[in-house]
Length: 191
Image 1 (tube, one colour):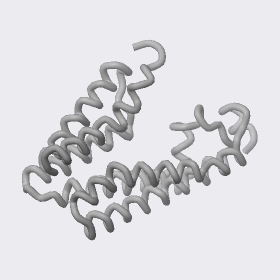
Image 2 (image 1 turned 90 degrees about the horizontal axis):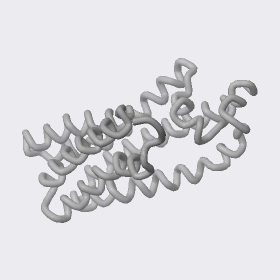
Image 3 (image 1 turned 180 degrees about the vertical axis):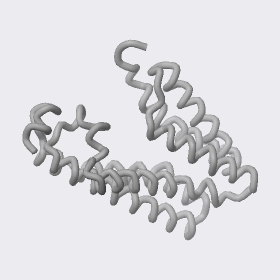
């Protein structure tokens, strides 16, 4: 497809499977929600491929983890695996960002520089903050699923993680403003 994808596509791919998981859990149970999550994730990836002719890397990683841990949940009839899925995804993302920083590449820059043009130092700081945030969220998911009921964990997974992510993103605004450039090309000139 030539041109810009429809504005509904990214939210549908990013949040559609989560909404389906939540509805299926409250309608039936965790097992039905796991099946629904796996199916909705596959549909979201197929939709992205059909419309954009590509599959974004983060939804692809998430889909792989959903497939493995959802499959283990259903096969072994053990909810531990699906509850660990957010931990694994968040830990992978945090580790990838830290790995990029270790080799001198703030990996958020190529993903977000058109939306947030910044100087290199800003990208390094933002990447570090995101990496720490993802690792903290992985640890928090572990605490919640290990100490709370399944219902509390489902609400945390759907609403708590989203709310904490929104608060984290808002808290980054001063850093974005402090390191902002006029355009993405300017970031390379000022380092």
